[in-house]
Length: 320
Length: 102
Image (cartoon, rainbow over all chains, first blue to last red; front, top):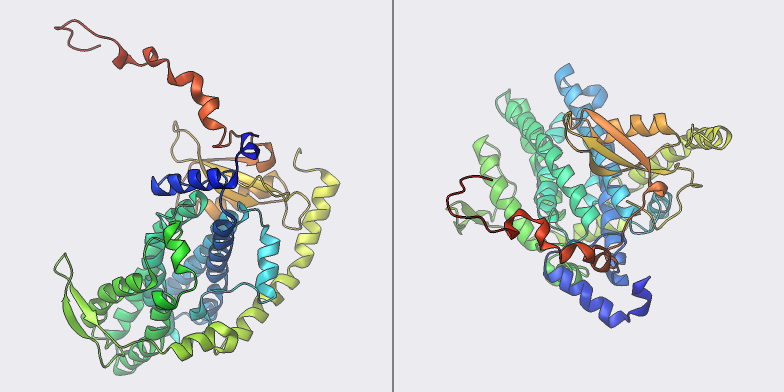
């Protein structure tokens, strides 16, 4: 192989030229170890988030208020599982197996989006999750479609195609409740009160406090900063809340100007970072429950994997 | 596609590459990969993961270990023989005025 003859400085220069020229980096290409490590961390965290995110929504499948809403919720949760699989397969191209990623999750060495450590207390929460949590995720993922690592970027394109139904179904739930009885309206307002701030926290720390932003931006693993994406989400979402009569739970929220399309931009309060770090560090309302459930499901499924392995070894079924 | 790790002995089954044909007559396009223990499971997993919205009318599944590929560091020299044969392109040729379409 030619690359063994090249020194690291030359390889790095080639790599950076590619990044500069918007050429995607592919699994067999040389990449700096720090780039690979950052991708391993970011993509696996993303994959775990999709899968752990199935739990708060799964909590309401049996109690969905109609057959229509139950079918929709099932389809959405199935999508989340699928998104996890797209992302695990992108992450595996970095030389780490899915088993290893799941082991790191179970050992607490890998994280997932903190927002899924909040409980879903009633049906309105399913609306709030689809609208706000998926809405925030979409804002982030649209930007990541342009990520420099080919397999990650392609997974994002696929995921974004599927996500917009998720957000719409959530918003529709909220809208219907706001058109309903006083009690339903109170439930919807209560849900946005509880989910608004966790949704904003999904974008991560301020850029100035983010350990990972610098290299990630330089190497185009991330294309826009945490704060920029958060602003985009707020600007899009506040008018949607107002349209259906929901109040955004931020007393300092007010229009600060307009963007280049003439749409309003907003001034708002800062996030409660103490709460953010508490939940990130394992002290949110459901951290323990989410992880325990994942471990339990994984262990209870072990016999299926054992049977399938035994079947493969006995039948040599790859060739069969 | 994952070629850098050995997944054949893991408890998640070997890795397969998924190719989708979106409509009859079109070329198959790589969509991603999945784990499965045999051909039947590979096809079913690929359907469930990659074609939940009628993305395809047909699927190909190929064990990832069977894929042969050119790495990008080799590609300039590998494809070099094609680059100096510009006479293979129709735009290389001059045509007399008056030729309407060729």
